[in-house]
Length: 195
Ligand code: ADP
Ligand code: 5GP
Image 1: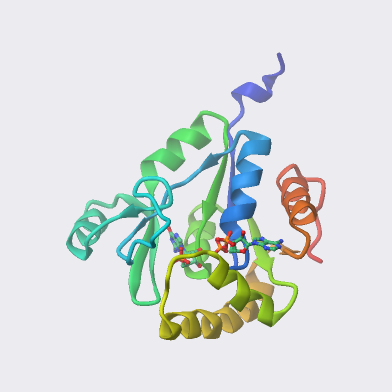
Image 2: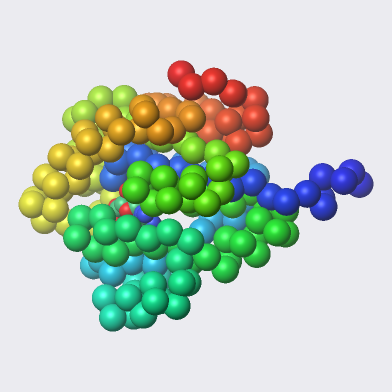
């Protein structure tokens, strides 16, 4: 037994455009590191394959705004006209318990967290090519309409541009196993420099 078990955990932010593979990568990293994955709250439409409390806490706008008033979010942002936010307490508890805590959130939210927790490790996931994103958005099986998909792709370009400015690490998700290993290496401090 080392003193490591008594140390505070590590806060890890994973961002990237819709469909790039964040959920898939985070799921694998959580298993590999026994990490704690924060479940965000959102006011957006629940997709066909999604489960309340597992993918997100699906809230009404009134419920979400009431929680903002109660200061229950570590960060929140409007993304695609819907609220998304990270419930504060579960994250604080898991960090205090020494866990690796993963927040899968957008760039606006990531910058809010970084201000409050400068020690947070920031990772941005990139697609290997533009067209790959569109295919992966379809692959998620949420049954989104064409307009929603179009906006997601437009937003992706802006997010990628700002990520170069703000993120410590950029990981290309082409080969999934390789991308997962790279994220694990970043979390474990084996990769220190921006690519
Ligand atoms: P996000 O959480 O970023 O929106 P998902 O993890 O839901 O993205 O992935 C979108 C789709 O792309 C899913 O169908 C997933 O299985 C697929 N996918 C993820 N990573 C890869 C990869 N490296 N190669 C091929 N398909 C992938
Ligand atoms: P999606 O609707 O595709 O699940 O997510 C849309 C965007 O919202 C993604 O960029 C995702 O990272 C972001 N997102 C998910 N949860 C949160 C959150 O709690 N806070 C913020 N700021 N963004 C989030």
